[in-house]
Image (cartoon, rainbow, N blue to C red):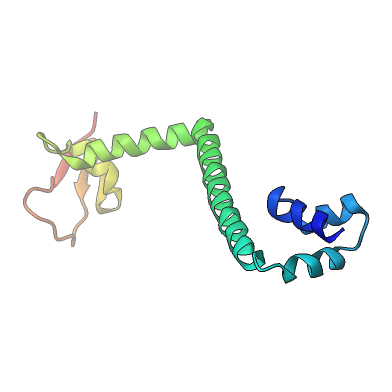
Length: 138
């Protein structure tokens, strides 16, 4: 019986609980036989490392699956598009940001003037010379 337990654990790579069920004996009996073997510590470490690697891979798969789910979501696509547009507007690149885009991103510093149909910089706001003071809106 002991030889069969050792074979199933070390050669067939079965778990102790599975060996106990298969042989219809207690898991404590299996544990006593297996832990007395000189190869036990090395095998236990090998199995621990294999489980750690398996867990890492499963976690990566889960994260990628969740990300894909989010990407497939319509709200995510709209958010990403808005983010890309904002990045393009604010990055400048070869041309500077338009006055309208600047006003959209800094709406709290402008006040709408209905008479002139324009946005005027609020009084008391200190800004650089490149910031538009009045933005026509038609």
